[in-house]
Image: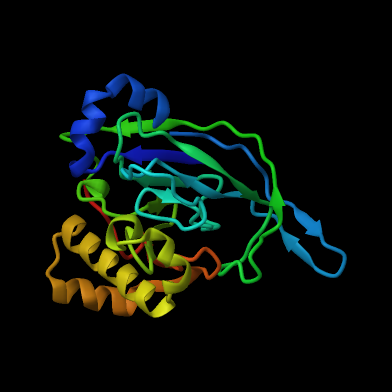
Length: 240
C-alpha cells in the first residue's frame, strides 16, 4: 500500500517551514499482504487487510476524540485503504504527524455493527510529502481525503467535512451525524474535484457524476458518518 500525504495549498507554509520534519513524518508506504480465504465458522470470506484509522494531525489546539474522521483523515474505516492504494491527505500542521491503527482483516462498507475483524498488521510504508508549487494535478486543491488505486479514484465525504472547525462544540458530532448531509458533502467534494482536475463546468461535472460515478456508505458508526464516491479511471481520465 502506498500512502501519500499531500500538502494542501492552505498548509503549504507550515509544511515548508518544517520540511525536514514533514519529510520524516509524512512521506508514502508499501504494505505487502496477500488476500486469503478466512473461515469464521459459519461464513467464508476473502481477507482484505486494510487500515481503518490513518491520518494526519488536525490544526486544532485541544484534545479531540479519535473516533470521528475529519479532513486530515483519521477513523475513515474505508476498506479501500489497502494494498496497492495511495491515500492523499492535506497537511495542516508542521511535521504532518502521521498516525495509524485500527487494522482489519475484513470489513464491509458501513462497518454496520461497529467493528470489522480487528487485527494487527506489519507492513512497509512509503511516505511522500508533496510541496506547494509541485503538487500532482489531482491534489492541487485537495480539501478531503483522496484514495487512488489502479482502477479508480475514491473521494471521501462525511456529515461534516471538518467538524472541528464547523461545530462550536466538536463533541456534538456524536449526535449530529446523518447520511443525508454526508451525501451532500461527498457530492460537493466530488463535483469540485472534477471541476478542478478535469477543468469541467459544473453542469459537465454533475452529468458525469450522474452517469458514471458510484456513491457508497463508508461507515455508519464513527459519529461523523461517511459517504464515498468512486470514480472509475476508465471514464475519468486525468491528464497531467
